[in-house]
Image 1 (cartoon, protein in one colour):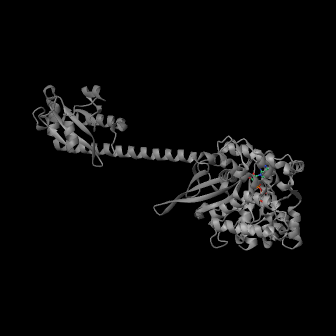
Image 2 (cartoon, rainbow, N blue to C red):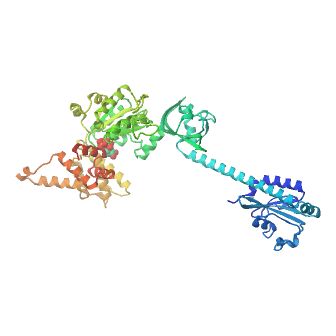
Image 3 (cartoon, helix red, strand yellow):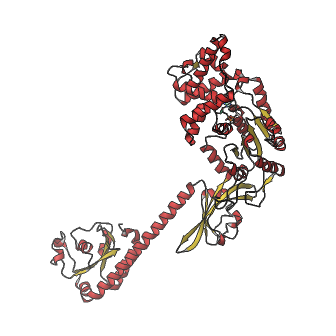
Length: 593
Ligand SMILES: Nc1ncnc2c1ncn2[C@@H]1O[C@H](COP(=O)(O)OP(=O)(O)OP(=O)(O)O)[C@@H](O)[C@H]1O
């Protein structure tokens, strides 16, 4: 690194004056480029100018040696000086300024008359020692200046980076006394609470800081005047020289976390009843009732076949409710391994089971806070958990697995299923008391084949959506295709219809979609129906008809064989079958595949 003498100009000016007053000869200090940084006497006017490269100063820089020139112009070091003929100096001393092995500049003493020369020559040894000490002083100043600059830059980089973060960051000393905080933390907490020297326990209600180890994602509730929120904090000790010198606290507000998560998941919070498209009389009446139910707090159970829009309804109910600014947490009860459902729903404390995270973990009910918890595929919830869920709904409190602190349950519960819960209750597969708790407000969404008038309305909406998305100009469906779309039974309901239109728009090379472009699965269905209809012979009766379940089982088997059973295979199989991933898992379980 190159040391910059002009950065300590003021110090050099003081040193120049000191040398001048002690020895009473003229002084010049130049940097490694031979720019005069300070000077005394007649050279004062030349500060800032470059000294000739052939001057003896450059010899001191190159050799890193100090020397005295008693006979300028004829001295061997002056031989190639281009200014030697005009030189009026009587003697000169040069002492390089060495910083960490590098020559950063030169101190030069110049005698212009015999008296000054005498003072130099007679004190040669003392003088050189004195200058070397001055040079060391300058070197130490330069190093100090550089490290101050480095620390300033680091502190600045740290502040800028901290302020860019969406999480709150607070630094404390080893006793938990606040030293600094970033902008996000300043938005979370009051200025007074974050004041330097205040203890972190005030805001995070912690045990005394001296005993905290690394902590991950511990939940806390904050409440001061109007400002109330639920959040998570982590603590990381700052350790050096084998000692804990302080702590870094990172803080996330739950709301912020949820909105980041829902953005990542692509499920924007904007879904409202306007996104539920229908011109069917029955559906319009259901939507109008649902708008009213949105305002209340009672549990809602949404029933309907797979793909009819149950989750869409649940999101719209949340987003049009007074809870819309709180989280919407969706839990797919059929997708969770049975041994994890309880901790997923209610959270766990540290050490409650092998593999439990340090600091424990909040569950979905805790995350939902005062928002909405959406229990999808509720019919798949194991019986023992149904009892726990019922208790939570009745008592409005729950505890984390392995914990004993009771946490109040403030979220509204919306559940959904495509199973017939009444039948399940009758067959003792679902607890009747829980069914009544969940089903305070029942919403039943009719299948697509029960509202055929919606088929072409939805088809055209999806046509526009995918044309835009794929930058295509596909504008309509040919008549034959309209016939097919309207008469097909759509077992996968709107999801299947949406996927089919996406496929058709994708494949279309004209400005319309053709029946011949239907995916093979549907084409096959279409021709099977046509040929079955054409066959009016008595043999028709002898054709072996499979049950719907058998057909379904065979198709699932085929899809699993084709795509495999790993995670992406399951995704692809579910897409090919036009059912949700969770539904596929359920059916695999059901048919023992
Ligand atoms: N009325 C509607 N208008 C527009 N899009 C709809 C409508 N109903 C459903 N959809 C769309 O159909 C797809 C399936 O909807 P959703 O996931 O809500 O169904 P579901 O009943 O919850 O399905 P599953 O039981 O398989 O979980 C989604 O892409 C959704 O946006």
